[in-house]
Length: 189
Image 1 (cartoon, rainbow, N blue to C red):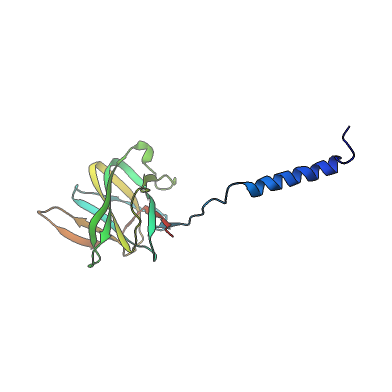
Image 2: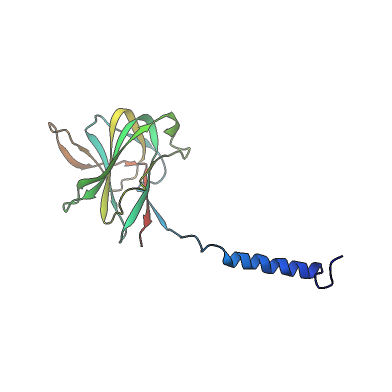
């Protein structure tokens, strides 16, 4: 039998104090981050973006909010398999893609492909890229096969195509389709 000083009501109170003490003595609250997801489409696929050659590049301009932002991920909604070259560029004083910040190659496989309505995205990790600020550009071109990306019919004014072929250079030309691309960033403090 329990002593009179530790009856069920008293036992519950003692357990409550022990639990409360453990909760306050635990590790500090987890660091909170705020993520920014940038996109120009309306999440409705209405067509695709194809790449006629390895010199054509689809380019999107992203104006980041004030301050530095750490890149996290780039999400692409792919329609057809192939190899893509993805480049993040600094911006020039003329508001055009400048020096490359990072270039990665992504092989789009069957498991990466979407029907445009299933919510499937190919994700490229950008966690080891330096913090960014101001205007950056994301360029995507094919590096092999016949990859295509889903697009929406939104005319954002931020999407362009260019041809880097030395024999047939074409500067930035605005396009009326917006590729299904998401740039995810975390604010730096």
